[in-house]
Amino acid sequence: MFTIISILFLFLISIFSILLFYQLKKIRHYKLNSGNCPVCGVTTKSFKDENTGSLFTVEAVKQRVLSNNRCSGIVEIEYKCNNCGLKEVHNSVK
Image (cartoon, rainbow, N blue to C red; front, side, top):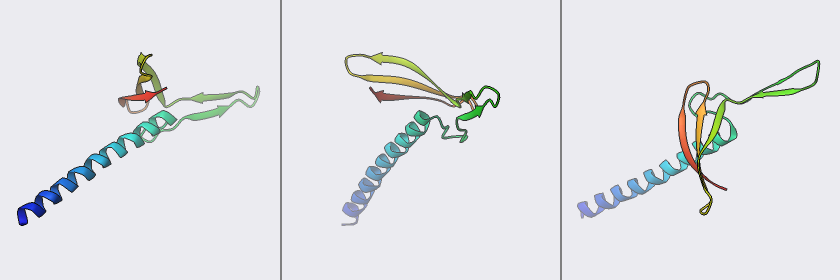
């Protein structure tokens, strides 16, 4: 009886840990896609020139398309933080 309960308990822990992993991965992808670094917390900065009224933005996270699979609609994007040097590759759907 103890063996069955312990196996069930370990199974539930493994399922919840897998779900937590995918949730954290999705949150990191959302932060990188919006221009924020999940590691160092740097965000996109905007400056306004008072003389001309122009708005300048300095992006903290650069995006680069690695592969664009046209038939399936999956795009691999590399995100690179300028501040801490973080590099991550995520898949996106067009």
